[in-house]
Image (cartoon, rainbow, N blue to C red):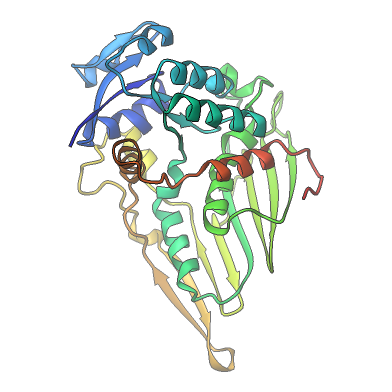
Length: 342
């Protein structure tokens, strides 16, 4: 296995939690470099890593084959351009862009440079979503009628990170959690026929949206995507109704909490949900008699994303998160509020 020497453009929460542990433990990668402008912390955990003072210095490292663009959202496009022009493959955090035109430009540049531009949509590998996907694809629910995905939080205070609360391109909850929910829906159902988006600002002093409701119309059923920062009593994160039954599941993937606590992705307990967070499947049989089954989720593991990255770069295998899906996502993100769009 020929390893891919990899650099992270930032070593904040995203770098420490969502990228470094997987690059460091996957046999196909070597965590070679990070950018740390002030505090030099990476070598405490990864002694062999080189810590650069700037993105420009890291991109000048000819030994790096892949860089992870995990900087603030409003810098994604610029740093991705720089990385591609420096001859690197890129793993790009969400949101991958702030407009459909930016998506076309960045992927066009990657093609010109002969490099892979790959989106980091890790929530496809959440344990809860994997169970929802399994139930829908099994056909047990019959023809779908209504689908709801939610991402509820309760945070009354403003985020201390300025880029999260300043009205810049890519800021606000729509561009923060919206890419997760939209990507999950598109990965299951494809491009919607019509979409509608509503946003709101409810926290005291906020300058960016902290609530959204997005409706996706498909042939015969609708998908609602909802997220808010002032939801004190979260509803089930996944609710699916079909002509033969219903399924509901809480958002209970444990990977983020485990990684924040320092657990290695190689630990046996990594990605395993608590037993009391199982999903509930209700099937209506003859005479409308209902049967309810409790379904535990399989192990969640973001290693699957890095496995896909490796096989795309080394073997040219198709990457599961496709450019067209990201284009559809950005068309929805950029859509004006309360406007139905074809």
